[in-house]
Image (cartoon, rainbow, N blue to C red; front, side, top):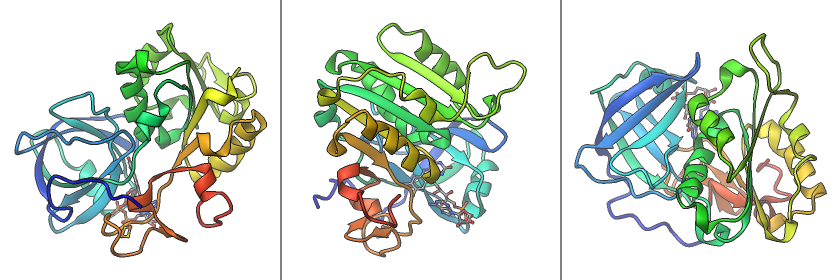
Amino acid sequence: MKKTKLSHSEYQVRPAKIIRTRMMTQSEKYFEIALSEGDSLEHDPGQFVMVSIPKVGEAPISISSSPTKRGAFELVVRKAGRLTGALHGLEEGDALGIRGPFGKGFPVQILEGNDLIFVAGGLGLVPLRSLINFVIDNRRDFGKVTILLGCKTPKDLLFSDELDGWSKRLDLAFNCTVDKSDEDWKGNVGLITSLIPGVTLDTDRTFAVVVGPPVMYKFVLIELLKKNIPERQILVSLERHMKCGVGKCGHCQIQNYYCCQDGPVFTYEQIKGKKEAL
Ligand SMILES: Cc1cc2nc3c(=O)[nH]c(=O)nc-3n(C[C@H](O)[C@H](O)[C@H](O)COP(=O)(O)OP(=O)(O)OC[C@H]3O[C@@H](n4cnc5c(N)ncnc54)[C@H](O)[C@@H]3O)c2cc1C
Ligand code: FES
């Protein structure tokens, strides 16, 4: 597998500063971060960084902003344990460490000229947003774009202002559903899979990009395969426990792949039949 080029050591922790934060939901916090040297991160959509706090630890977090945003990048962190809990305690002006960007992101050059259907479940919107905004910023390079989004309740929606903007655009189709509604919700109620049958696709030229919790993949893949999208045109992004992020420790291994280096983005063709993958 080809290794992603890095302009700095993959072990080097680069000092960074938090420019802006806000709570997006009860458990997810948004961070806008700038590298202290003034460099741009120079990532591909779908890559991740290793975020560290001295004496606490390090964790892989997806880059949520598009590389078309210069000067700073964005992360969304769900409070899960030690490191993510400590990150939630940080505010504007606080320092943290960044390694990366790491991994293989979405194959933008292959996607160019084709139709795209994005399927995002819950926190899966975070890495997918980097590609969606890249596509929007380079809209003429892509064909028809459909975005399907699902989450548990309206309160779990991330980037709701931005979603509102996407839903008003005439150059993309946007549809959203929640598993459980509240009194203010006027949209769809039901699992994300319920949105797929209603979409018309030109399967020869459509790439599906799916990111969500492990339980979602199986059922979304069934629906996409029913639409006859070829397996090599279905892309997924996988999460694994990671330590080094650079293909050395083996923590993230899925048979012959290291998720940190060969992924996190894979085609369904690559991982089909690998029990530990999905
Ligand atoms: C490529 C990649 C991208 C990710 N992107 C994001 C992101 O954008 N935002 C975000 O909030 N999280 C993301 N994660 C998950 C995040 O890395 C974990 O939540 C984090 O490592 C937990 O660290 P901690 O020290 O806070 O928790 P710990 O104290 O280490 O563990 C707390 C709990 O979280 C579980 N856990 C630890 N790592 C993972 C993991 N990788 N997947 C599932 N459960 C885990 C542990 O088993 C334990 O139950 C990503 C993971 C990967 C591999
Ligand atoms: S995290 Fe060490 S090999 Fe992938």
